Amino acid sequence: MPKALVVLSGGQDSTTCLYWALERFGGAEQVQALSFDYGQRHRIELECAREIAQQAGVAQVCLPINTFNAIGGNALTDDGVAVASELQANQLPNTFVPGRNLIFLTFAAAFAYTRGIRELVTGVAQTDYSGYPDCRENTLKALELALRLGMDARVNLHTPLMFLSKAETVHLAQRLGALPALAYSHTCYNGVQPPCGECPACRLRAQGFAEAGIADPLLERFAQTR
Ligand code: ZN
Image 1 (cartoon, protein in one colour):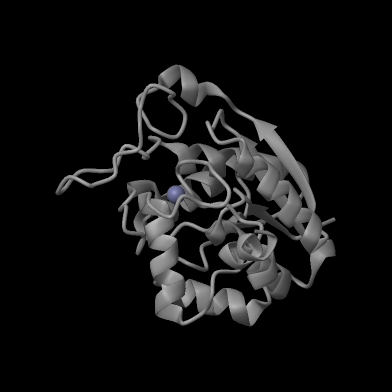
Image 2 (tube, helix red, strand yellow):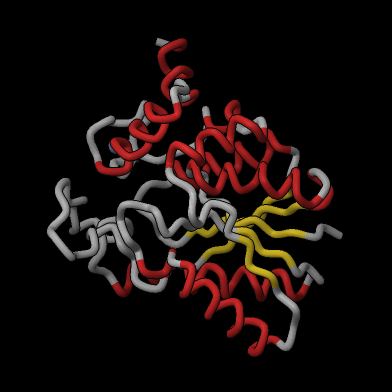
């Protein structure tokens, strides 16, 4: 029975967290990955998550939760909303899916509960430029308490990237041996591979690797196959 459950989106941060969990909890036998098919427009994320879990030798389950489409109004699940390229001051970007992490982690906790898993790992970071409120430390602490009370279980929410800059996350990935897996991760808000390089997510990722002084293995993979 694994000890830890990692919420794996197929992105850079959750991939790094998967390798953090492998180190922290004693290898692939002790770790399980959980992904969500939440109706994201870019199905490529799910393929990336599957590939990354497979490479790490970790069992992975994908849960379908497609209610966000019915709610609408954000650029990640609503075909009618384009990703805004520039942020308005004091405004959340339209890639914010309200409540997404609360819902992911609540389902993750329910999944973990039925399997006797106590350790939940998520790649949220309060230092993220977007300022998503459901990625902040205080939200995650409150949610951890709510999950413990609501399920009468000792659930621990681990957020190893919470206070790391993007460059520090890249250095962590390097130390953990996660760089080869990052070659298969997905970040681009436009859902294309090779990544567009222009959207806010691509620019943030590029900035992190540049500041860390490390080449992005994802870009290197496409440079090699060109
Ligand atoms: Zn992009």
